[in-house]
Image (cartoon, rainbow, N blue to C red):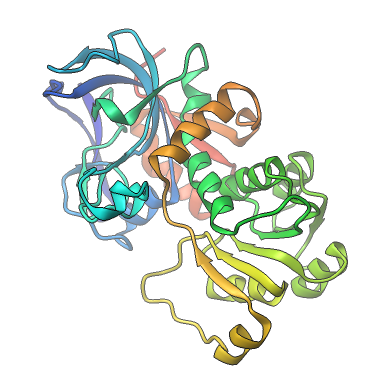
Amino acid sequence: MRATTLTDIGEIAVQDRDRPEPRANEVLVQVGACGVCMTDYHMYHGSFPVETPLVLGHESAGEVVAVGEGVSYVGVGDRVAVNPTVPCNVCSYCKRGETHLCENNTTLGGAGDTILDGAFAEYVRVPATNVENIGEMSFERAALAEPLACCIHGVDQVDLTQGDSVAIIGAGPIGLLLIQSFRNAGASPIVVSELDVERRKHAAELGADEVVDPVESDPVAAIKEAAGGCVDVGVEAIGGVSTIEQANEVTASGGTTLIFGVPDREAVMEVSPFDIFFDEVGYRGSYSLTTEDFERAVTMLRYGRVDAERLITERLSLNDLPSAFERMENAEGLKKLVIPRDT
């Protein structure tokens, strides 16, 4: 089979490899589509260090073509989405359902303590418990289950009540999924701050009640004006210290600031303990997804509660991954999908 392999920092090669065989309790999935994520970008550039060679890619869907011993509830021919987070199901976190915090953190092609080969390949080997049936849903749509599950997890982190106001800073692919996730949960109003005019347009059409340009005017003031004051939940979906501070500045007393974007590992910021105490503003992080989040995401996609197709702007071959990273660096387009097999 062909696989796009990270061979060193900034170096990728399409290699011919032996097709993997599923072991006990595993399935082999022929990859139909795999999304390109900022995690892939960080691994490629070395800002998230990994051991190479490694096949990246953790947002995938495809068809089961072989099953290992002991697999009875998944069959050859099943169309599935792949959950890349592999829990041990033994540690305390897994036992209480927090599989994303597993002490033996293992992932398929994504960020983790132990990283197995992912889905920028024609085939990927997956634990049978890590696939969800997608019925007749397209592989391209189903490939967004992983990022959508992360957004569903983020909404759960803030204990949202219907009618709570939300501000989201950043309307890239993740920001646009967060808009829809918060809207599905009953948030109102939803205000979005975004630099790019096309992304602002998408934000408005996908459920933002107000959209502001952070260059045209002070973003904090503009968000407060659009929302009629501070908001119950301030969400940062970029990963920068300055934008995290913006999100916190627009969060009302008793509210929550959600750090969803991935900050640099070395980033630091100042916080006022007194303000946290006096205003009862809470900081929450949102890392990855649980097994339950993934199942919910597939259901949301199957029943059309999320517009996934609008986010897909590019379909690439296995050879095109470096160019995808270049375009991501320049914020060109939205979601990029790798289609491993020629069609």
